[in-house]
Image (cartoon, helix red, strand yellow):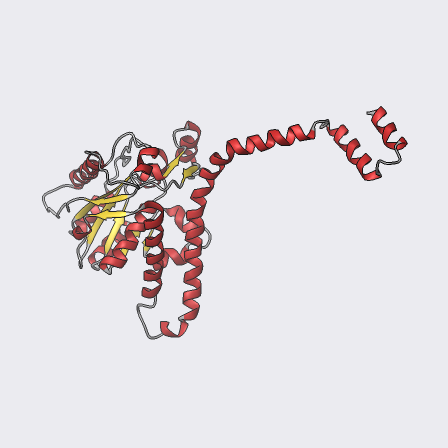
Length: 330
């Protein structure tokens, strides 16, 4: 390094800035800067796909916040109408439903089978399997709004109500945090109501084997009995191939069980084929217990999984299904 510094001082053709740069690189030990840059470029090439699959889920979050921004703009544009109309948000719901339906069609070739099982009027409780990100449920709500002209109320986890900025979206799309009395009230008022008994635990810790993780939860069955409404099972094919979580790592399971904080990383956003299937309604039976009804509903969803989902799920196979019709039994 001393010899090089002497060369810098002695060489009149070498600029002072070049000399300083050379000394700085020597101090860092980066004599072969080009080799280091080539190595970094190689690492970026190798890890870019991995980075992308962790970024894509955030695009759904961005889309949700754009929906919220639209609601704020819509409200400002319709402040005068609010005093004269009880359905000020109908236009906003239909607009956002159209946008989400377009996303479903373009990104996942979304299909829904059995929509005729959703009543045109009157209450029903829809019970569904929870994917790592429930985008399939967002698509379902959009379809119900557009094709049935009905709003499906939803039961969401408590943490949703703590996310900054989410309040307008939750209110406009009738998301409640799930006290049994509120659920029964919504059904008795003639609304559709959807719930995933597995909730966040099923979202984060189920996997491509599509294990239903309800534990001993029977609250949804008690709601259906109290409101005397049918239960409609629902499952979306390939929902675990669209988005996956790292819940298989014990540290994340421990954090969730200990602190109830959903810190499990989610990756994916793959444009796999989504097909939502609605099972036959399980009608109200005054002689059945809540435990038996919960088990019957679980069997209904398991039957949909067994019929329509190849296990274990495979991302490549689910991608190929975008280009040709294929069911599990094919």
